[in-house]
Length: 320
Length: 262
Picture 1: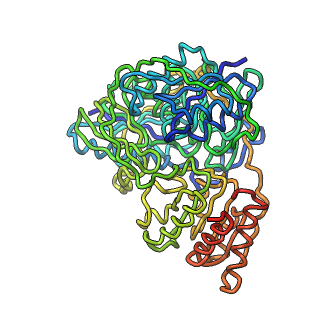
Picture 2: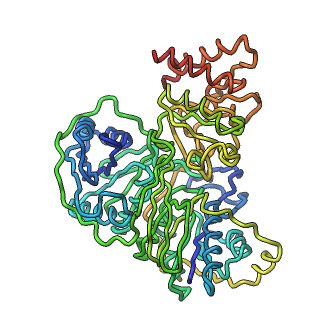
Picture 3: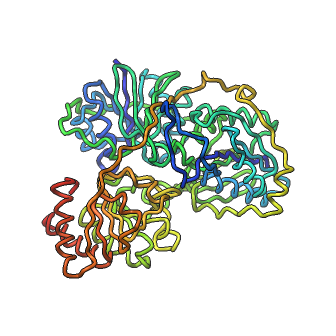
């Protein structure tokens, strides 16, 4: 039986949702979880509920803030000592940056951003989109172990019937080693909400938003349904929204459960970033806009009247 | 400074992607190739750093198929001094590409002060090569960089993370920096630049020359296929003010009862 580690990150007092998705998918295997730093009790309870057999809190000097070298050294040491066959993590900002570094320290390979996978006995086999979601391929790993995998958030979904595991977190000392690229400060972003790449629901605005101030109607809708607000490249290039909000090629690739495109025509560069969303709603005045070919539910109409109506209707539905 | 830029050649975004008959890769014969869009930011950054540090050279590296050398010619037309091309297939994995790039840097005979790449290639979207290469070279690296400033020995870069937050790093060179959109505005190649590029040195190497073999493969892809066709969606006309309320009510209802996402 493969010895599996899931590396997790904390989001406030909880672990990031993608960790629980991975754990749920690995039900039936013995899976350990590790995070850098102290693990709050709420996070421990979540991890236990989804089947973590052991929970490791990795502690050491110079690990209070992320550093590529420090985290890679610490995790490399821990994984080597634990003799793991597989290491999974979410394809988050940190996961995507960190895991290839750790893998290379083992001369090992990594499968990036899989959207599904199975473990056939001791062998991993995954599926992932390539060429901006225009095709899919099977991905397998070969060469030295451990093998590394990052999983796209929201792709697997949560296991409805998880098997529970251990309940406590144990401290393990790790060494961050020498750090030459050091964080001097962290400049806060505009949004405290879930990042686009991890959001379960996204409301995006395009060129038809006309100006930055109009994004507040999207914010209002987003607040009601717990969504993160995104933007098309046209909206970003017109100065309506910062680049951090851009969905699509040269922006973020997202795969939420629900994507609501408001006043977005659906250029191929935009579709590249959101075509794997589970359900797509499009609102556009142009009945021939390409976005309608990808939309599960298309509304031909003016977003400035439709979006506030949607907000009100969701409020009624959700009893807010 | 010895500045290196790694570029990848990828299918143009507009290109239709067709899996090959045996599913082992995609049909590459009719593809229009372009320089990976993120790599344009890396080339531009290299030229900006070169301009700020007299006597610096910019060397472009590429690993991939020989069908077209568009990406290298574009980089040299923009202003890069010379190029190394490692002839390979288009479906190498990240580990092999990074190892080949490291080998090409060794072959150049120059010790890098700065290596620049795009943050990801839009073909396989792996976001691995920059980190693997930096780890193999044992130099610090920062990815997803949207701001760059500094001297020939010390730089400050800003890395974009969740929610648009920025991590500000102080880094001692040599280092590897992976560029994101926003770091600069790439220049267009001028006509004289394009003419001059034709005379700039381009060294061609084989995978064997840079010490890479099939044994270096870590990731195997197979079974390339088109995504499942989505059934046609439902489209509602809400241009008539009298119908808007009913349409919105119906769509919200369907999101709950049919799509089950709310």
